[in-house]
View 1 (cartoon, rainbow, N blue to C red):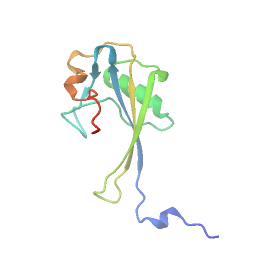
View 2: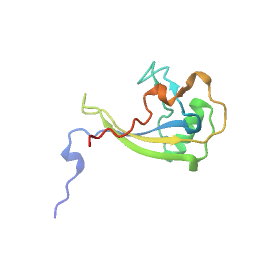
View 3: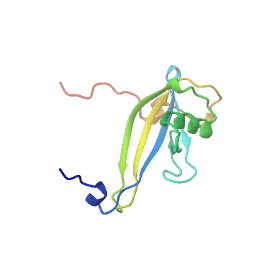
View 4: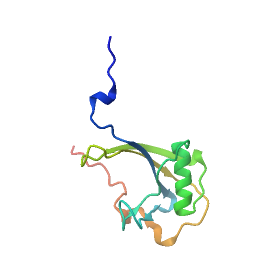
Length: 135
């Protein structure tokens, strides 16, 4: 049986990049911590903390590192709760990367959060709003 080389199936192989996104939650006080993007994709908006996974680094280690670098918060790896993985592909051109974004929440940390980056969960529109299914 002949084997098929993946390269021959697609004229351009897309680069695959891994990223992390961490959203710190203070559920006892109904708060979420968000960072303000100064540059790059999403500039001028609030977002969770995260970034690229470095070579020879695990996804969870990258999440812990990025959270600390961007917020100053210290977290142990076991405190990270993985919530999902987003796969995004840009269709603008054939060589755009496929982005694999690992999403985490964390509910315990050490360090002092910056007051202007703490939001009430109700202020974000993210609070649960009950059953939306018709009966």
